[in-house]
Length: 566
Image (tube, rainbow, N blue to C red; front, side):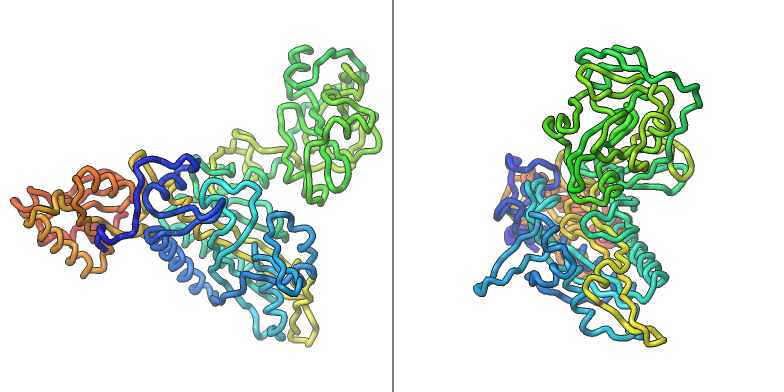
């Protein structure tokens, strides 16, 4: 490809709308243009990257007996109503009506569609296992689409669905997809971790997220260097902290004028936050709930949702708190009624603690949970933090940030039971299909690769997914000798299947070099006066900045060897 013909309108300034590096650089490198909020046009350079990621994904899915198909984007509401998700999926679902006033949605995911499809054709255990996948656009009406491709309203996704006869078969499909995903992200040249995660709106149990490690990642993860444990902080398990036994003192009401926060009450009483019980009121679809954690801990709202088996959790307002006879800043579990109490397991191991007394400017001291109140639920409720003990081996955990690029789920029979998707086993008995689903964000993986691989000059593509492997830059295309040599090198590389751009523009060398770094070609091949005079070609590695010199006759061989290392 000649640069003079390539549709890659680069920008010198960063558009104000771009908040994250990947968005900024894709706009500046002429890879992306905005059509509407959260909706983008992929220009040729980006499309080449996406196709390379797709091809890697296809090869790994096919290697695990995946079969590719293509399902409709427009899905009838009836199948979503069968599973009950039409009413609960939320406002992220794009809903449309046809001219006959029938309800449809633009597919945010395809569990209902694929299960309905398989239900009609799979009759016998002899047809299992079955693994079907597609690569297609998905649509989610984000409240605030932001960060370019990281959180858009239209995005490209690979979704595979496995159908097995039993849990052992599901375990095997899950293991195969876990291995395939590991291969995909490794082949894409990315640093990543597979972490335990929460299943969220998809449902089921047993799931891992594949996180591309990047400081700009939206998700926080924890991991242990002493064992293989890693988890999303929302999912991370925590064992209760045992407090050394103490003699229970008498429960006592004390004055704490205007002492509403943990910091204020601990300073006032001269105690540690670890000696206090923090009570947070939540409004949920199961009613008002009080969540209890130790004063130096935070509530994990995902864990709270799972304990309550509810959909919506939000901090309760003052009106809700006063409605149960308490006061904001002084709420506590002792003596309160008419509200569900969920306590973190660590709280139940505390002695002689301090908590709100449900009276203005009052707290209780010497609170002993096993004696003074009875929660409705006791569970792991807190948010993990750096240096907490690993739940598997006890070593201190570390934290990092990541971008979720893929996730694998065990759905079990959640959708097959709701949609009556069954098969006949070897005894002629009807059984529900056992399902799993496995998604990779193709467009998000491209963005995540940039978030992980860039510098102040531009993108640094891993060679496997770079739009082109190399760019040949003649210092002066007006110089006939340089132009002819650059053309020879370009054609020789192309003949050896090295994807190459020839920058044949009549631009200043600085402009060409800046564009080369911005776009992020793994190798930059410079043809200048030295190349002509000394028959020597300069090849610079984008990632390391190393420069290599090859005789013209050995240039192609040298480039191919360098690419093997990138």
